[in-house]
Image (cartoon, rainbow, N blue to C red):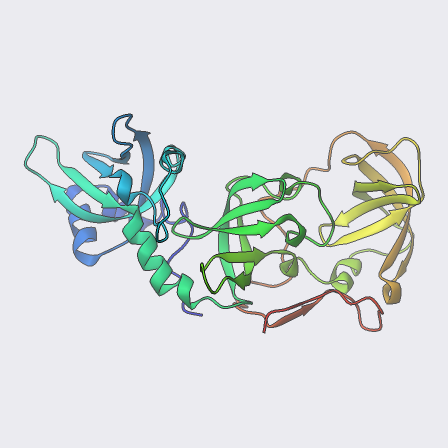
Length: 316
């Protein structure tokens, strides 16, 4: 995979290079000449044409409605797609600058930046590539993540972690900067689906942080007739004996009775429960794969050696 310069929106806005482009007329002219991709906040959408106004200091920045987003053949750009850009960083290329008036007007294109990203970066991605992403929207079925210049992919809820959750907001937050693995690419539409759980460690890697006899904090994720599943880490869950006073979402203090790798089983005893989840910074997951060093994986196995139940991901 090529070195990525097509980062999710918001990643470049505070960089010195970006500031040098958007902080002056001369900088914008240089960005236009060099065909640079820049970022600035969208501060308004007008009610007549649905054009975006972009904050460029002493220069008025305009993204025409038709230049706001790259769309597929026959796909119509909805007004809501324009409106929801307001208040967020948007990437763009400078198309031309009108200096005939009292205040210069820079006409910008987000679509052009996305088109370059799609052609020069997204089209080169393959299954198993590890890429930076930013959470843009959360639905019960999954999270939408920006994988480059505002181009969005779906992260299904089942792929966020091995430990089951009922909604992505139990694990992720809006604008969280994460990494994802390319899971599938539709050969017809080019739409990309991504996964995240492979970065959060195998059963063994997570279980190695615990030992029988410890009392640790967890989150009740599921309550069944035969017991309660308590999450110890996003990729590790143990089973506690049933109790009448526990519900999903509660924090719990649990005693680790036993750890059995060949069965992927952790037996727990609930010491106490209380309202509210454990405070975990969902914007900074703990990764067992360093994305700065590992850019691609072909295979990931969650299950320990010798375990009859195989949980794995194959990307070849």
